[in-house]
Length: 313
Image 1 (spheres, rainbow, N blue to C red):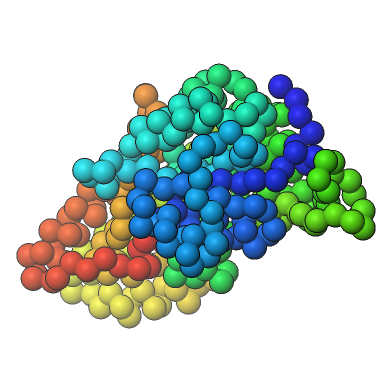
Image 2 (image 1 turned 120 degrees about the vertical axis):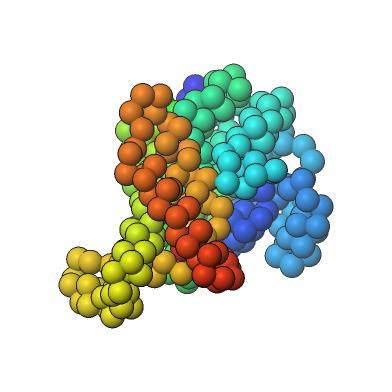
């Protein structure tokens, strides 16, 4: 499978217009691509079209790039990984998409998912994984276009994905029939201009995201463990934390209400499930600490409120 992707790209479809997908679609549109959206929630689709000019679409046959931004948690349990929705989308794309299109998975996924999707696409589309690092509370510095990791199912897939995401900001221009560089009577289009860190195996990209969140989970759990230590030994936690954080390479977090949101617990489970033999003992202990901390707070009568700092992804 070989195409000169830079000479083909015109239409981009963002699938899933929730907390992640809508900012992605807005960014893609701002970069000058003809941008479409697709979501099973008609209200989200209507809002995206009315508020931001993201076009709706039913058939996928003319799309050059598919960006998958769907949730990967169980609809009945947000703390449990669930990728069946992605596989259903892959089947629809496989039936309708043209050969050589790019499927970029930005959703958080377990190791091995990208290659399964490649198989569902009958090996006729390029598949890449570019996990998001977008954070809604600090979108100005942690937005769609921050440094990201990217991997491809094959070298060809990775090359195509890099041309779309980060071609060194080199502008491409096209008229009705062909794309050329630096022509005067043409419409200007660029890559997404996102700095990307390519990896040799797509499993590395898949693991990167879930380990980032597992690491965050562990940091919070340590702060919870330290808080429980202070309570048991009559030590002022806040003063101790402030003292520790005066050192340049120490950053003890606030435990607050425990590990917040659903992404960190879900993605930590994804990482633990990624190995059939060795399991991370330190992460399993961190999950026990979080449970102990929550029980402690409940016994003390604290009201559990989702914590913004602990939902940082």
